[in-house]
Length: 292
View 1 (cartoon, helix red, strand yellow):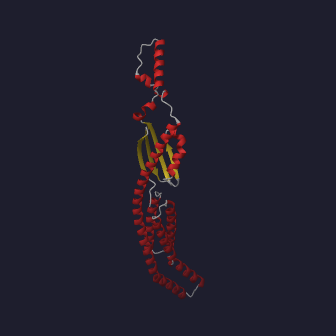
View 2: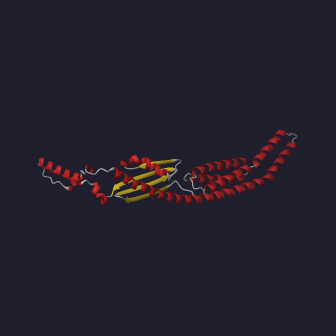
View 3: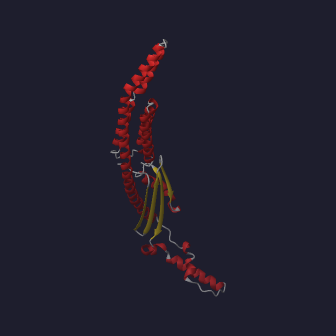
């Protein structure tokens, strides 16, 4: 099954006192490149995050944004250390008396020191947070994979349509090539007749002309190989593993064969068919660049 490398997913998960938001964006790329945008406190988890992404994204440029917040409703007691807050209030009250200040100490004044009395996370808290983050990442990757698979189906429909056009074009080239044999034979007969009229018969020249003619008329091998590449291309759609790189290689071989056919044929009608095949191959190449 084909999968696109382009996709987007966003997932928010509220669990065990944490609110985790994960945003994933994937673009096409030759190799896997992961760009992590995470809070500073999670920077040491980047290797683990990349390993999780590798299990789902073998290729492409993937950007992951992670945001983590404490659930104030469920974790209010863990967020605020009330004893420390009270000590700050007492210190501020004492300082007010010593400085003979008339200002009233408000709740907002105490909140200004919130960063100073946030309770430190224990190792258990850190592990619990990571469990929620890891689960959110995996769920977001599942959503991303579904989107990539859906886009892959659209690419598959387009590719199969174009491959059928190429197969029909190859059949036409073979038919036109066989029809050229009588005409080319007549051309050769006329050339030989002209040489006899001039009484200047160059045996070497005749042999060279015959070889050139035989080479131009014989494009059967190229057509057979092109058909074989088309078959392998269609067979690759049935593989569950990533096939983007394999399809790129097959396209190179298909392009080589059609170029050889074009260089051998001096027939205008065959040349037009060759051009149409090259156009289809180029359109397929653009699509394949986005296949995982």
